[in-house]
Image (cartoon, rainbow, N blue to C red):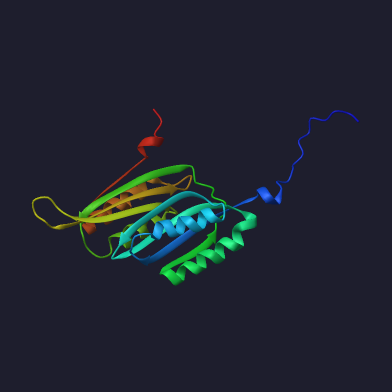
Amino acid sequence: MPFSTACTETAMPVSMQKTSLVLTCIGADREGLVEALSEVVQKFEGNWQESRMARLGGRFAGILQIEVPTREEEALRAALDRLDASGLRVVVETTAQHQPLEYPLELELIGLDRAGIIFEISRVLRTHGVNVEELDTTRQNAPGSGELLFQARASLRIPAGLDQAQLFSELEAIAADLMVDVLVEPPMNKQQG
């Protein structure tokens, strides 16, 4: 038999196949919720990969990504459903293949708190095909005046070929209408020198 350098695709044994899942959870805030969730993930050989969790309005809310052996997925889902009896609702979704766009931007916003800030900014972003990949918002009292300030930080992905000058112009116009300051720039850790 002649020697061949052609690569052949080999299937991973079923026992080694992994499934990536995104979980969202919410429940009345109390100690032990993260432990209960992580215990279920660990019991089914899951690997906790990324998460964002916070106490908001007396509730514990979180989103996390885990990887679990495919053979354990059904049992894991059933165990997570049973956490509802202890006051923690968990929704499980299989992750999609993520193809990030090439052009990341960071958006920072600060101004007096008022209704509609995120709606107005996100509407401008959507009309330009910009994807909000991460969004963190807070409110705090302004030093000196004590007025309530709204702050937002967002990681954005913009499509190739986007007219950035037009996007920035529209963001500046809406920022002026909302009386907020908006800064959009490439992420510091991704800038090339």
